[in-house]
Amino acid sequence: MVKLARVRCINKTDRMNPHERIESVGGEYSNGSQWKQSVVQTIRDIESGEWEFYVEEDGLMAGVVVAEHNGHKYIKTTADGVQPDNLLSLAECP
Image 1: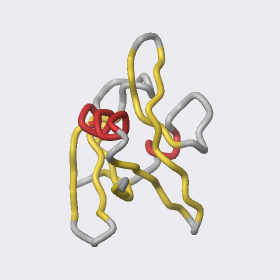
Image 2 (image 1 turned 180 degrees about the horizontal axis):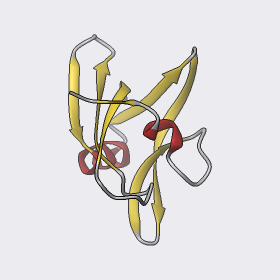
Image 3 (image 1 turned 135 degrees about the vertical axis):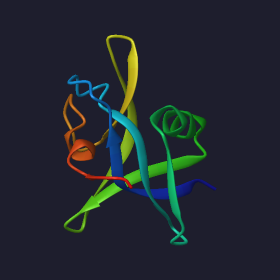
């Protein structure tokens, strides 16, 4: 069974490229416990098929997926076009 986790915050790098700006993500699991991890680990979790991540804004849910740009893997939501705007608009994680 796939585990589900809601992404509620991110930490950004100082890079301007939107495909490289997110360093880590955090949020809560379905049981309410808090978590935070690197984007590299999040990509591994998604690609393993063990975890699904999502964001929710105003009652609308969008899945987090792995994308690739110029050979660099990054995460974005299914609602985004090329750039990971939905994730970049989340609050900073503590």
